[in-house]
Image (spheres, rainbow over the protein chains, first blue to last red):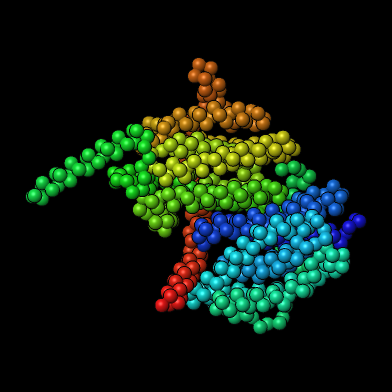
Length: 251
Length: 326
């Protein structure tokens, strides 16, 4: 492939939205209130809309006849490049919100930079996505505050979720091979530069929510290289089911 | 005035109110939340509107079952949007019902304890992707036939909610038919999947239009209040006459050996509906009644700490604001 780095770079971005969108989609019809149910479905819907823009572009770059669906649903588990955070399960509503919040703060900062990309298509996609993601970030931040500064029970649950998910935050700022090349070409975002502000924003909000910022420095990594947690396989089994069971058909 | 006289004068007063109320409905005027209304009118509307709202919410489950497994990104997005529309319908139907003096929590309580009903069709399982097509095409199709007349019903908040609901439902119906068309024109395996879904959803869809006229208990009163414009049997015939040509067009076969065009009536004759099955499902013994209700109750119970937290947080915030003001 002529533009392999760009292709891999796009997949790295899109897979986060794909896997997180799939997780949010699981909740549809099962939310704690009708309003949050609608909001979570909406976030899922936004993320899948973003995924389509990215994968349609990736398919064009690949130029080998593969479609957005082939790229989304017919790769092997080791070829998914999402961060580990995105694939963590909906253990309870605090985990759902915690995962979303920890990703949204990153996602928003990332898209603000991607808008400046010298690649026009990526810059246009980022410009469209950032409007949606700023809403996601507001939604998840508000809920972290509600649950953190709500009842004793909700505070405990929210704290537990943040503590457990914290180990997956550092990976957001790891650079892949494709990242480095794309940064050099003025196309990609240097994620290492987002780290300081990220932890500052997150800590400030956690404090406002009467939650503690975890002190643990033990972090997990590997998602970007396709070394995932055990959760991903089951998620992919659902995501890929139709394409695997009924190959080469149109829907 | 003696107690007897007060009572008499009150009865007379109610009678004149009721007469004026009936006249307003006859003139096609809308009844609004703060207007006087007979208690039976209020109760009937609470029953029907909350049942309608519950159907939207429970109806999210069979389709939600396929969100994570939709066959393409385009289908996944469309399905998510559709199920989200249903949540939206539930939301404004609950709000419209609340104008009659019942809270959403009370309505949930009635649903969870089995006191309130929801559309029986959602007690059937969604086994294959084709069921997403069949539900859109047939179930939403039958729902539209039931619901279009409600856009002109006498209770204002319900009528206005239904105008929006019907617009979205008609979009869903076309979307469902398009899923079926794609399958029917696809590989033999896809066509078989579509035919199987039609076989399973056809009869329950006919049952959605309600018991036959001679068994229907609410028809006369509902006609008067414009909750109904046609009888169940008329609506069912309309649904069949509209749907059979659509099945023909995409080469699928309606699973009814007695289905036959009746030149004289200008309508299709059709076979006997299995009303025993209908009543079995209505009474709670369909394939998915227990699972659907468990999913709703579980979501509600698992969400309790979240709702409590939101209330506590709102209170804390209000208190802080008040302190600042002082």
